[in-house]
Amino acid sequence: MLIMTVILVLSMLPDKSHHEKTPVLLTIALDKWEHLLAYMVLTLSQIVEFLQQDKSARLTKNAIWISCLLSMILGSLIELLQKLIPSINRSPNPKDILANAIGIILALLVYLIIRRKNLPFIGRLKSG
Image 1 (cartoon, rainbow, N blue to C red):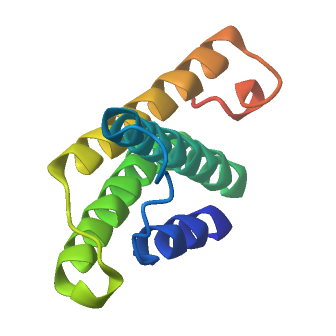
Image 2: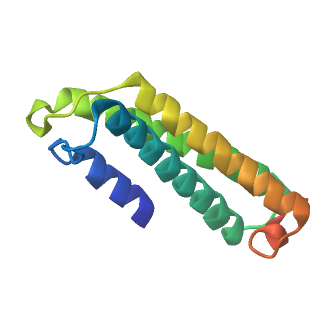
């Protein structure tokens, strides 16, 4: 919940071009990396949290997909809110949603690699 709240708050802050002295192309690239990393961390943390709650095989499969879906819904809703609330001086960007989706996919891949390698972090949470 904390990560989700941080993402929501940061996404709704008025745009003050926090990279003012940075060239425009680099600013755009940094923004997409921020989206990718934020949604990767969010999704991976949700997967771990769901799996720690119940380790049944059915919930494990569902937890992974629910985590990915929740992250995607959050990112899409934030982009919609940015359009609906003009006072925050933000605008929705389909490339942000793409960067979010890439982060979500990377989180899924990281989880699967850790589970497959049976590493201590998530390895013990593997599905049945």
